[in-house]
Length: 133
Ligand SMILES: [Zn+2]
Image (cartoon, rainbow, N blue to C red):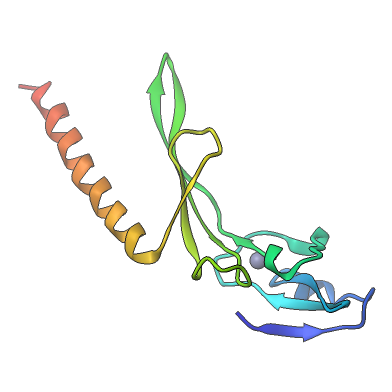
């Protein structure tokens, strides 16, 4: 994360620059912070008063399963970062219930969870293959 540029309060960078940066106010001055490469949020309307509220989010991916004759999302995931909060860097956010309650995982935790998903998928495949025997 780095500060892309600064501008006097009330002014904006060129429109092209807004796609890759987000605004924040630091000590009464508007600053424009560079987004990580995975951030897909258009921050043009953001105006956080506290630097700790600056955030970035990736696209959300979702796994759905058949429930009661329709598809329900059973696992949503996305990347998020609050570069000035004390959370220790970008996180993988998981919402496994659809309730909006989510867990934030570090890179190591996210890779361990992904490995568990792969193992779980192998077990589901094994169960499914028993149906054909
Ligand atoms: Zn961003």
